[in-house]
Structures are given as C-alpha cells and as structure tokens.
Length: 339
Image (cartoon, rainbow, N blue to C red; front, side, top):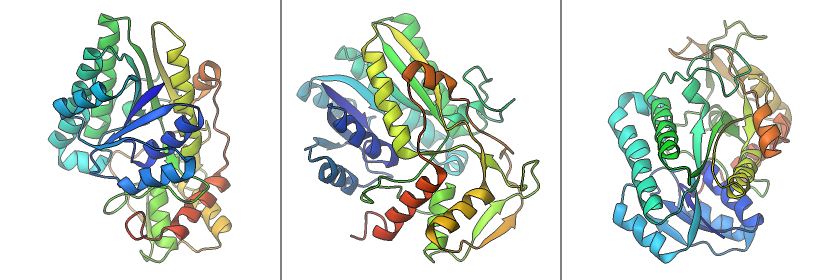
C-alpha cells in the first residue's frame, strides 16, 4: 500500500517515514524543503534500505500534486507539510494562512478528485491555547492564541466539514505536545533553519558551545522550580503513533478521530536541562528572562484516548530523549548541511 507523506523531509515526517517503511508500507514524499533538507530522505533510505520517490513540491501546487497522484496509486496521506514557528506566525500571519490552510485545502481537493480519502493530519496542542485544566484531554476548550495555532485549528475544522458532508472520509487528527530526541542511529534528527524556537535545539546549541547560554523565560510560575512545565515526547514514539493511527483508520469504513499524543507527564524546563546535563556530561549555562506573553505555566497531555483506541503509549524516557538528541548533535554538529 502506497502512502503519501507531505513534509516528509522534516523532523517528525522523516522519523515517521522510517516507521511506515518498517511497518510494511510503500511511501512517496512531497516536501518544498523550505525548512528541511533532502539529505534527511537519503538517510531514511540508508536506515531502511528502501528507495523513496521524492518530489520537491509545494502542496499549493495543484498541477504538481495531481501528477503525483496520477503516477502513484496513493491510498492514504500523512500530512505534515506546514510552517511551524509561533513567533514567525505572529509577524507574518498571511504567510502561515497561505502555506498551512490554503495548501491543505488544495491537498484535500486533489485527494478527493482521486478518491483518496484516508488522511492523518499533524495537528498540535497549540489548538488548546491557554489550557483551562491539566492534564489536557480532547474535550478541553479549543482557543488558539497565535496565528500558527489558529491555522492548525482551521485545518481541523476543514477536515471536520469534509467528514460531515462526505462520510466516506477516514480522518485522524493528532494533537501532539513537545517532540524531542532523534533516531537512535544518529543519522536523522531536528535541524531547524535559522535560530531555533524549541527548547531542545537551544540546549544542543548551548551544550555544543555555539551559544554562550540559554534563556529561560520565567522562574516565578507556580511550579516545583518556578520554570514552565511541558510534556516532552520522543519523536520516535510520536512517529509510531502515526502508524497506529493509519492502521486504525484503514480498518474503518467511516471514521473521524481526534487524539492527544503526549506522555501524560509534565516536566519543567530546569528539570529537562538538569537531566540533559547528567546524560551528556555537558554544562548548559542559562539566564532567567521575563515571561513571554502567551506562555502558560503548565501544559501536559492526557493521552488516555490514544492509549485506549490506538493501543499506543509513549515508552521512551526523558533520559533517552536527551541521549538521542545529543548523539544526533555530536554526529551532525551542523545538521544536514555540513556532512
């Protein structure tokens, strides 16, 4: 069975490509490489021994997408393609709407034309905004507070409308929390363009001496050590959840599924830094900065629904997340570009 992976050269997409191939699926990858590198696909091929058809294409390209569907008998789509920087989305919301929403609409139109109506959508816990309670379950109010989160919520609503009007669609929307870590081969990992926005790449830069210290925004939250608490999940655990979700929707004749993907445990920024220092033997200097507007004190998932419906649960420890992230950094000090 052939699966199209949009954004498959990216961080989560590339790890999911490995799990799809290991699960017996044939894959085709589409990525415009605006925030990723084709090298990641070459390394997925090295890890798996598979040959992966790859198309450098933006999902807003209607004609290009149609040609891909004409060339391959695609049965389902795993949709990762999209921009993902919260700060950039605030400064350029139109860009995020065009890429994330308009691009998704174009993808869904082409899928419908070719009667491919099985899709896994890469959503985000940002759709919850400032959580009304923790742990966050799927019934928590949806209230995105930045343009990036709004685009994820818009695409979710588009998919809900598709399903409401046509019950032949099978849809899974996976809301995940904070993916970290890397494949244990050290060959693929997180390599953001420009200055990273996420905590773990910032830790990597500081531990490797590229940055003198890391900023921690706020030490006066009502948490065990005053720093913000988040739910960090190993990217390989996350990738495996996508394969579970794919098998689930392919077994159903009509289904729309929404699940949170996280460990169910909150970890403070300072605790994660301490664990990384212990695992790597590297010091990570930091300074305390003022809280950022929109940041919340505590956010972590209730993954019970994913445990129950998908028979999935996060298995890898924080130590393993840090160990694998550091291995990737040591083997690839400049990411995919240097080697």
